[in-house]
Image (cartoon, rainbow, N blue to C red; front, side, top):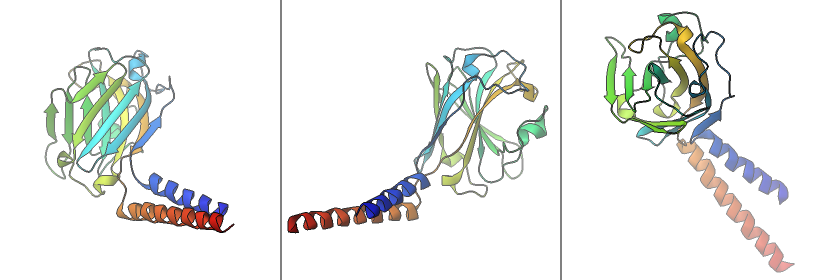
Length: 222
């Protein structure tokens, strides 16, 4: 009975891992070696999370210090919808991690603005601005990006990849070289449980109930 109970627990744990929110921590003080700006705590990530509820991607980052409002400070979620490339290295140097790939962005600023930048298969980027779209609370920044703005480029919407980075622009109006990028946060895979995962969970709950009933019967007969 103990072995069966452990097997059921493993089944349920596997189903939980297969979908749901994705969150991770990030070491404090791990500024990029290529970064040449001030080592401000509010550019240093300590955790991040991405949750997909079927309609919106709910994003949250935590910093090593209160956000504040320095000019040129950005928090950027690079989003790979299936057509991501290493655009940071394509746009400027020095070269950074080539596995950081994206085809859309959610750019958050300390004044509470969120800009969603979507690169279509052809033509110029589409930019949608949301005043108050970035919610600042001490050392956390939260935002919600509608799925309607992030049309798939190959990945299932429940399997988009999110990569976070911070930037301190020398010119607050425009991106400079990649030496302005201070820290990479964890890479996240926002997802919701697939139908197969729900089936596993339901099946696991059924097995758990059966095992519990069988155990009660054995106790009654003992």
